[in-house]
Length: 238
Figure 1 (cartoon, rainbow, N blue to C red):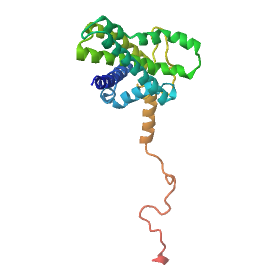
Figure 2 (tube, rainbow, N blue to C red):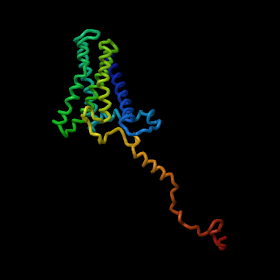
Figure 3 (cartoon, one colour):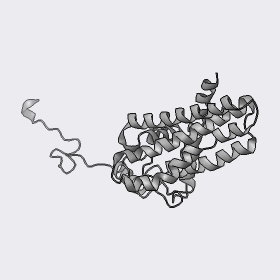
Figure 4 (cartoon, one colour):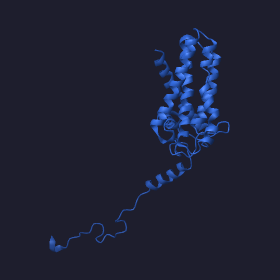
């Protein structure tokens, strides 16, 4: 039962974070000032691409999924130790084992890992791993807070405020505290120039206008030898 709720909360936080990432992107990280109604309401495809982009980090979907769900399960099993060692209700063990220890450790150690393993493709797995540690921690905390009230509300709120903003910057490929976790020119970017109203939109509109103009056919410049109403057949054939 608890694990089912954990998966349910995990799905919710993944979708919630993806929606938040999308709106932050178009409102703050994009230079666009005017938006179509579809850009603000019809976002299902964009949300799916954002989630897929996280798992596709490094270009290998299998490795990305493994890093994400491996991190999620690690945090879930780690949180269960608090319930085993502690008692029902808020206690020191519950709060210690729900602290984002793995998330913070990977986050602050990334500059050293990047320097030590420069050029290694496995560094791209930090993004799904960091996302799994954060979302797994929030999902596990939601289960324990909702079922047994094992956590104080302010403590859980602190977990939200600490990890969700980091994921928003991370999934948008924006630097966090001066650290860049992923190159902006990745070919797996979920956003395209047309999505955010870049100058390519103007070029596409010009192209549409060109297509709207009437095309000249292959016989446009041919002259009519007979003229309107003339009979092309001689009298001998009548």
